[in-house]
Image 1 (cartoon, each protein chain N blue to C red):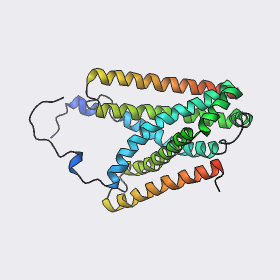
Image 2 (cartoon, each protein chain N blue to C red):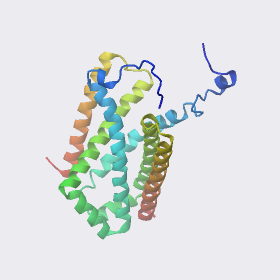
Image 3 (spheres, chains in turn red, purple):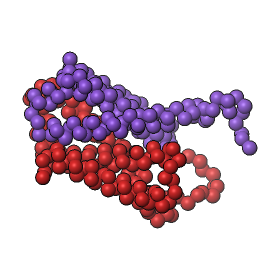
Image 4 (cartoon, one colour):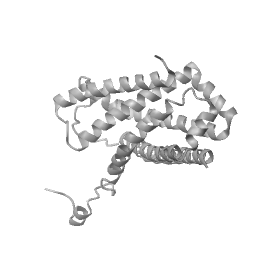
Length: 128
Length: 124
């Protein structure tokens, strides 16, 4: 690390937190969480390839309360990363970078995450 | 005013000597992952309460197996690029950085190989 006494620019704690900052760090956090989700996907596939007994163990784990919490986290992370990732692709094309549009897409990303997660769980577990 | 040397300017690869390759690959993988993720979620929600033989029958069909293989390969590639960028941003000690980058690459390779082998064993 540099040890010179140069003036430094204001850092994160100086600014008032906004939805765009929350989503920015949540995009990275959800990306890391999806690394754990990928492990879960690999476990699912390995359990399937190993036979009915191994798969029964996997199903028991996923039916438990901690298993359901992990699956809910996986779904939320996946949907957030998907919705915000699509927004990032628009930003990469130079579209929607102004403050008003960003404020609107913040809400769209939050709503999209919740709605897509809800739909997945309602279909997945027949919650209706 | 640019401080780039003329040859550096022509190559356009910058100080990391990779240019925009890493960023570009991350974006291409991201675009591919949009339809693949929609397919994955739409399929998996139908398998949550299904028994072993139903899931095996589903994953044994060539379309399911091919899409699952693509999801695993592109997803793990995207994951590796993303984790690599996070380490480059936040870890500054050279030894620690190298160690974690090795672990990420090894870990991602192990996950991908295990998942690919499993899908092939089920489908073939």
